Image 1 (tube, helix red, strand yellow):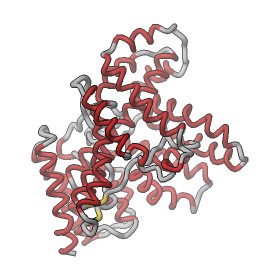
Image 2 (cartoon, helix red, strand yellow):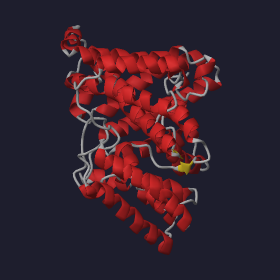
Image 3 (cartoon, one colour):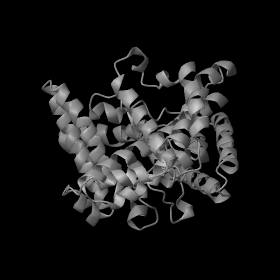
Length: 405
């Protein structure tokens, strides 16, 4: 156990140093409070080992949300109202998963409290040493992920925050355009951060979950969710789907899974609606595929993604319900889009281009592993570096959409 503990100390130390140096706004409390709480829980669990405690852990962030101690994860920049709870959503889900598969012990304390993962995601299902691979080979494979991730965040992601004023508009055209832009932003931001961390940890000799697997290279919403936030999907599968499916119908199970996911993001009416919405269309897609209606499933996917993001992003219920009327108010929103900076317009083009390539060329051999291989070729990396130099700017607000609590 002690050997494993010390093996995990190095990535924790590196994560701490990076947070202190790069994320300079991080203070020591954000590093040590999660470590203290996870350590305390490890002792608590070792001595008492209460049954079903993994569910209490998983929903602890939901309780914090009910009492206003944490913000809901709509994707906008929002910090926890209590520094004591920083990282709670990630390390509680990590511990819950590890307990459920019988793998939580003292040696995992540093893994699940790694400050770099808590600041950006993904959920720390594992951090595995890969020192047996030569540093040259690690660098060759993992460094391109960092280039892709940084481009996504800095060039294609951050400037999109200039479009966020569109959330105030409730007409159908503005609503759908905002939901599309916001989906692109969340993908560029969260996927970009995840790929950057995946590459960084790989270079220094550790493998972590590849948190995104080209979700838009999908033929239906089921495949989409298999490629989006894979670490959370694995937690939900182990904690909820596998347990509920043994007792309930498929539809009831899916409702349970998606409402659990909704409560993890925040306890608010829009997330409740979001959970029911995705559960229904996930179930409907399964039925369509069983009937052989693959084309309908493909056509439904962008509708589900965009409407789902619309619901997810807006916890102003009165405004959200007004958007559901889909009233038409002309094309004035197009002028609003053109009024933002050129960098923001270019960022939107790049983001949409990423998604277009994933979907349009999904049947090509280079796409099959869904590990961004098409972007890791020397030519693609050179293009990204050149475009990054040309279009890098200080336009927009930079933050981690999933690193706020």
